[in-house]
Amino acid sequence: QVQLVESGGGLVQAGGSLRLSCAASGRTFASYAMGWFRQAPGKEREFVAAISRSGGSTYYADSVKGRFTISRDNAKNTVYLQMNSLKPEDTAVYYCAASRRGISITANLYEYDYWGQGTQVTVSS
Image 1 (cartoon, rainbow, N blue to C red):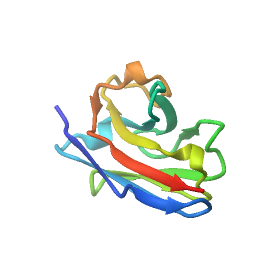
Image 2: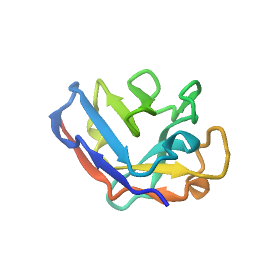
Image 3: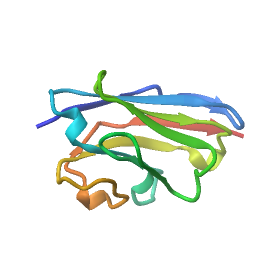
Image 4: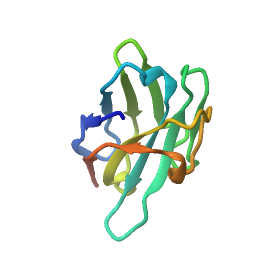
């Protein structure tokens, strides 16, 4: 069992930046592939970025590629999402997730076992 707590959301103007953090409990953080997802009002939850257990591989949704960077610090049990050049369409609740299934990296939300409570990101135009 792992508990995930996101932080770092807020209100930012278009073109601005935010850095989200997701702190995980437990001593097995390095064994989980991690991902970030987001959900806007009235829309389904969608994939944003994923990172492998070692941090050596990353994968991004086309909509954020080149603007967002996912990283992790296994010594601190934390995964990050650096978001630059934010757009109003990035407005959503952002969730981090952990996969315990031994998968190296995945964009499939159904392959994630643990979820945080989410943090709101609002980008004004």
